Amino acid sequence: MIFLRNSHLLSSMINVIITTIIMTMTASAATFEVTSSGLMEPGVTENTIVMTRGGDNGALYISSNNSTQKCNFDGRTIVLSVPLGLKPADMFYELNLVYQRSYELMVDQINLHNCGVRINGKHHPLLLQIMSADSTPQKTAAASEYLAPLSDFMFSPYSSGLAYHVSVAADNSNNTVMIANGAVRPDVFSGKPASFGILPTGYSYLQQLLPLLASKGAESIYYVMDGTPGNFVKGLCAYVPDFVWEYNITLMGAASIQDTGDVEIDFDATARNLSSLNPDILVNCIDSFCDKWMASLRRVNW
Image (tube, rainbow, N blue to C red):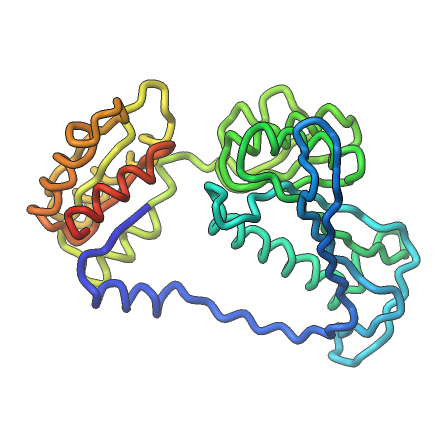
């Protein structure tokens, strides 16, 4: 998580990082359904939201030469499933909305523009199943255990802790592959040969973004690490000292913080200090108490 002090840096970054994706899609080739499923499996409460998205046989699609053709799905449906926090009160609601839309765009692109996935000459449509899981370990585990036997592939929601339960369910089903989001904890994959994901080193996380900020005029930096014993997130800040040296950036300070229950000692004192220093860039390598740290920063108008 990175904060920028100067508004001109922010506007420059927006111009650099925004990518416009234009896709021409035929509406009839995608189905969308929201149901109140009343699932009664342990931990999966009644009125759980279930959304499905797939392709319609015989619907129009765009071929590679831009001509419009009808799609004939003559292979079996490939089922993709994911448990997500879909309610505004869920901890990772906003992040999961991004995940949801990304999965939907992928399915629409493949179904609409490629007539599904072609395997041995047959076109297999993709069906995406999204089940609300409240961003809690208990509900995610229960939803995953329900979905895994019905799925060919499972995707993970945000958070390594939740991805772990999806991986366990996929592994238990013996016929489902779990594809994790970027950089989940190693225990998500350990002992689970059917689980896949991206494991970049913590050092590499900021190697593109921080130099980009320097090129836009940033001259100073402050970074805050999660001091909780055994927490891996602090490793994401490992590149900062090398960045400071390589780009001649002023390091205004560094802090290691923990959540011990005392907001003043844990967060507010550090927030006031960095606010008085007013760096161009603030890098936060923090995990479970990120919401409390953000609240502290807001109290000092950062």
